[in-house]
Image 1 (cartoon, rainbow, N blue to C red):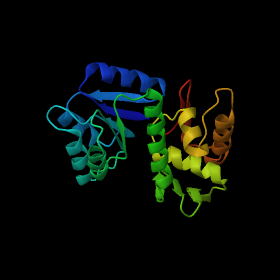
Image 2 (image 1 turned 90 degrees about the horizontal axis):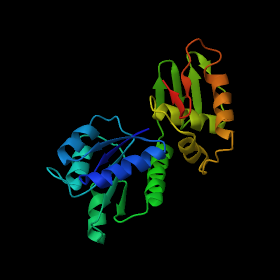
Image 3 (image 1 turned 45 degrees about the vertical axis):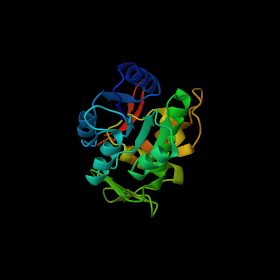
Length: 221
């Protein structure tokens, strides 16, 4: 998944890019508020990590303009402004979470995963890509004219892949989003469930949708 970091401190931005990269994310960085807003409005990011005090446009204004233009990319605000009033302002403008500097990177990573998990679980809509259609609210999935007989977890896994179509999802991200657990590198639970899902979604059809990216994870495209 691709994240956007908007942070004007080069050292802090490098730290975030490196740490989030090690978490399995692809990270783009902007050092300017206006440029950060334009990048966010492209809609290509799974989440934005946003500083408040930025040149050209502050973080509050960025979130407010994003929401005004129907950009629902999740936003985690990251700032040294730690008063309750500042936190309320950030959240009321449309931010999904607010973390005060200095912070532990482990907490930042956990909050990012939590925000993404909440967004994924909140989706109750029909998702479609080519001839594949999933209605999570009704527990229904079909490909072409064929109904797919999926378990609850398989349906949730397919929804996740569709929600992040084109993004490479790491095993860690999938484990936390679908099973709400920390991924154990020695476990093959993700691979087994992907294999079972492919048997139903891809094997009967010529066009394959679920792909393995060696050493990184899985992608639907």
